Amino acid sequence: MPTATKPIYSGKAKDIFETDDSDVLRAYFRDSATAFNAQKKGEIHGKGKVNATISALLFTLVEKNGIKTHFIKQISDNELLVKRVQIIPLEVIVRNIAAGSLCKRLGIKEGKVLKTPIVEFSYKNDELGDPLLTRAYIKNALEIADDKTLDYITEVTLKANEIFKDFFLKNEIKVVDFKLEYGTDKDGNLLLADELSPDNFRFWDAKTNEKLDKDRFRQDLGNVEGAYQEILKRVKSGIQDSAKPQHTSTQAHQHTSTSAHKHFNIKVQVLPKKDILDPQGQAVEKALISLGYKDVRDLKIGKEIVFKVSADSELKAKSQVKEMCEKLLANPVIEDYLIEIK
Ligand code: 5GP
Image (cartoon, rainbow, N blue to C red; front, side, top):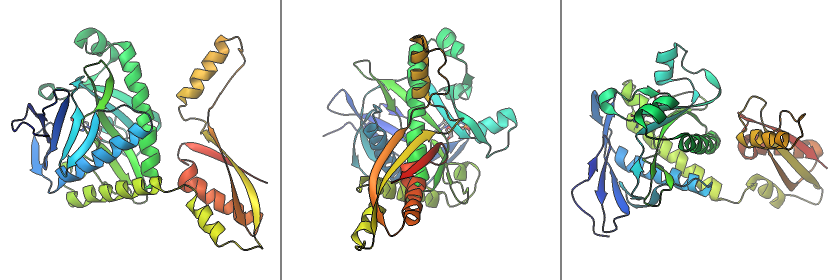
């Protein structure tokens, strides 16, 4: 598709161009990096290509899980085609672990695991230094979003957070926090927009807590390119793993099973942990109470997974299934699981 050569918008790390289709834009990801409201500037070699590719993979991941985004496709190393949207000037930030401005603002130690994920809004305005907003500021002073829009954004953002935490944990990365932007398309649909990359996420290695994101640039920690490449590598391998048929270790085990092996029917129940936010559970609990079942409490919604494995003892089957739960079937940070074997 022939496209314009002059950007209609040039941000800190991306240029946005029109295309022949007035509803479609081309986003070119540059290597330039800024921090502290553009007071610190630099280049991260290869960042444009890495961020465009990670964004394309992560937008595809959330789309598969039912979140509507502006992403259409990646058309070159550094370029994505995206739907034209009117960006709501809000930085929607989710935090799982204390870091960055939260620590500065509240004097909390970096690394504190927050009781539940926190969603906050900042005004996307460089001149003002992206100030933190209250709902009243957004609705009644700036008038840029109403309650319904903010509720929807919060719900989608928390859902995206669960998808990302789950995906990255399987690839040994903690999602510390991230910033999202939303926009409306010509039909009024609210879409997740902007980018999904180590520029707007904090990622820590799950084992070592090594920082694998723009904090390496912000804090002069060195090997910034290496960290971005590492995230790309793990995202690519995570996407490949999730495309493989599930329970591969069970299948591999079955291939080598002999007639001495017994077959076990497995049932795994996965439920959100006690203190983990379960919006679906809360909604059903509320609905039951409003139907007159006033004594309903602590309702949680989870999932049940059933399958068969073969092993030479129940103990071995159980330990294999436990491993599957830790690696894939559950997210041990936020979910409990119960294994039943028959
Ligand atoms: P903090 O408020 O702690 O500085 O940032 C929280 C999270 O949002 C971090 O993951 C950070 O990368 C992201 N974030 C906050 N402001 C911006 C911004 O202006 N641009 C980008 N790309 N990310 C941001």
